[in-house]
Length: 99
Image 1 (cartoon, helix red, strand yellow):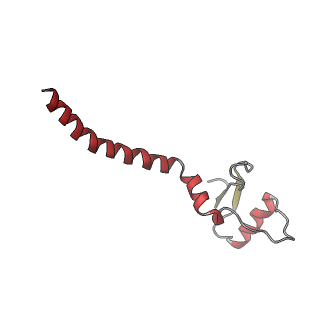
Image 2 (cartoon, one colour; image 1 turned 180 degrees about the horizontal axis):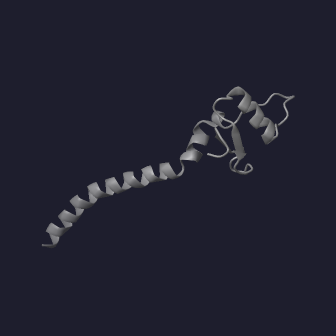
Image 3 (cartoon, helix red, strand yellow; image 1 turned 120 degrees about the vertical axis):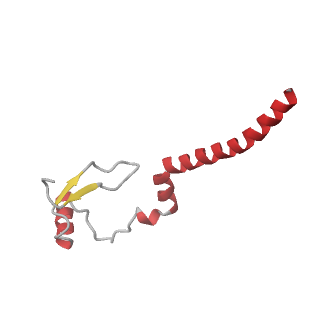
């Protein structure tokens, strides 16, 4: 009886272990998706600025974006200042400030 249970345990644990491993690895990829993307595609997160370029204030940036796409965005809000881990300024854009 002990040998039968050992065989059942072996043959049930192998496929379940493989499934559990795949679930854990895919979950880890999803959790670290941002970091993986930044590592694999740094050009999406960094732009080389010209030597004479100056940073724009958020209001100037909003005016420029609004000028380029006037029918799409009329209101901008800066969500938070950049952090050390994410040096970009996150902005929200909407058609109307009341929506």
